[in-house]
Length: 202
Image (cartoon, rainbow, N blue to C red; front, side):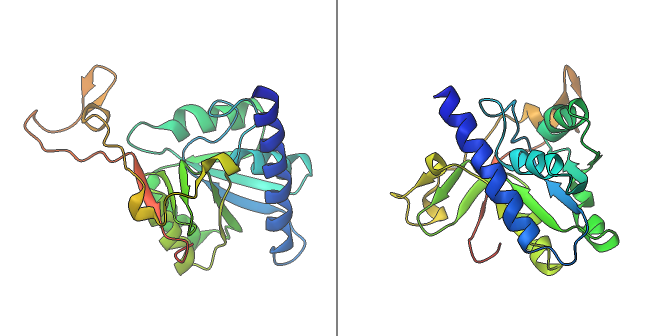
């Protein structure tokens, strides 16, 4: 399973980078935006969406990567930013709420994210925040790509409405480590771990 997963991820990286470059206007390098963690720390060792970024970097076609902090659990800040710095890939960590402003102020060539589950019709569930990134991408005419292996596709699910969404602990919102940062303990919280993206949106 280890070698198969790495082989699949490298294939995703290759094909993903090729399609991004095919759809690129001009012959310059690519500025990419990604969300959550989809790299070697989330997979067997190469990554899906981050594998696409690695492939672009290896081909010397990558100008810059912007990765979101990915609230509330900060997988982007803790994991993706670490992997990018470790591999000396030019990158900037941004707050989740900066995505729309970034697309307006900088030319982002593509958004590439992973997927927790893909339904038969192409609807995708991924880390919460992905849905709004897809909508903002569509508004700004930025190509939006989902990088995932076949094992993420569930043909028994006719649409994204059938994908079960996990509700995660309130503490991820209210605390950083042992320190409470939210209002008093009776504050109601909603912490869905995933959002659904309809195929037609992206």
